[in-house]
Length: 292
Figure 1: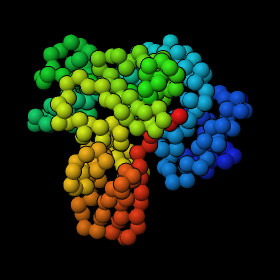
Figure 2: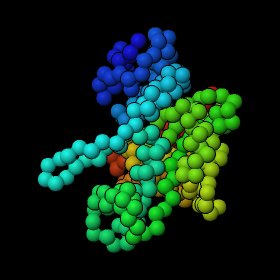
Figure 3: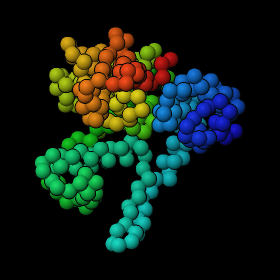
């Protein structure tokens, strides 16, 4: 059956299909049972991600089959627009699209930091055009690294739990093992029991950057409830180990120093944020991979 998620899920994002996935009655009940107690404090983006992460392990064979079917539909299309412009549309496997965009974005940001007056959108468009046309870049293109998260047993082939591609969502285990060996893909191996990261594959990072990197890998996005922006590591004070660090976006990193705001990390890694109005909100990072 094609589930539409109407009966028990009070989502703000409205009734929707579970990403178009076809589940049996038993599978739909299992997904429902897994997510129903976890969505009351989530925004629509977090709910969608939770459902995607839950459906993939419940129906791994169907998930893998759909990924293969979609991959055969990859294509590039040109759509002519008004006033001398056009849209170049590429439908690609997620890991390839993410790597391309990461490389374009990093070059654009490096040019911007060197004093370019063009906007980031303009720079990304120009960098993309130059790379496609073989024009030499004004700066050395940085390594375009994309993270894939998979638990240790899946990485070693002892089980086939879906992995997660950063910024995209769940991907089949076989695909995760393939792309984890790619030079531009950074693998993050997680504990199969707790879901915590235990190893980050690295190509050239200095050991002094390892703790900061671990925090960015663990949190993935800003820890402030409802914010999904990219992170930079923030330390509460004292020792800067991973238990005392959390990821905040640039905006919330600045906001924490404004009068009336209080941020506190508990011993269990929960971030407590107290607003000037006296209300306290708590957040903890989503497990990188659902624990066994």
